[in-house]
Length: 84
Image (cartoon, rainbow, N blue to C red; front, side, top):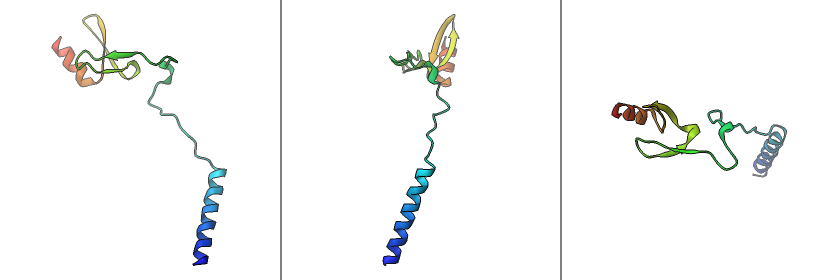
């Protein structure tokens, strides 16, 4: 029993030492555009089809009838453009 506890302790110490030598690196998400963020926050836009608000960096934009509109999905953009 003592040998098993010592083996577990040795494994734990080895693992902890390994974590100190090779710490995990944190990575930024690649799909986000951090350059559009402002200290005050990001501009929110409303989807004219469903009424949902979302950050402008996540919106799908389209020019409809000479005006710029922002949509939450391709489905909402398609429904809105076929309706207009």
